[in-house]
Amino acid sequence: MRKSLLEILACPIDKHSPLELFEINVHSTNKSSIDKQDENGITQDELTYNHTSYENVIIKDGVLFCSRCSRFFPIIDEIPIMLPDELREREKDLQFLLEWETKLPSKILDHGVPWHIDRK
Image (cartoon, rainbow, N blue to C red; front, side, top):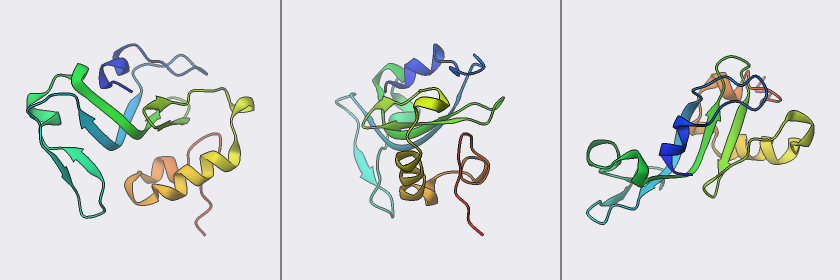
């Protein structure tokens, strides 16, 4: 998903905008940028935030979050999955949350809608 898409996206449930973006894997189409990996092997473009326009920033994996209704929408392989609750696959969403548990805030992991991780 191009980061510039954030400007036009809204929650499909309550139409709230802007959505919060939590980036996990990010890269840039800017030829002068340099990829680097963090301690967990997650690739992020070193120049993404300072020298690259939002148009050139690609979110490979991440989460869109609606602060009004607390719904989260995963971004998987550059595609934001913004389906209504009844069309979402619980097991896939929970698997995504568990895979990125160390990279996501507790408001998504513990309180996200339509489901969250029970970490008791």
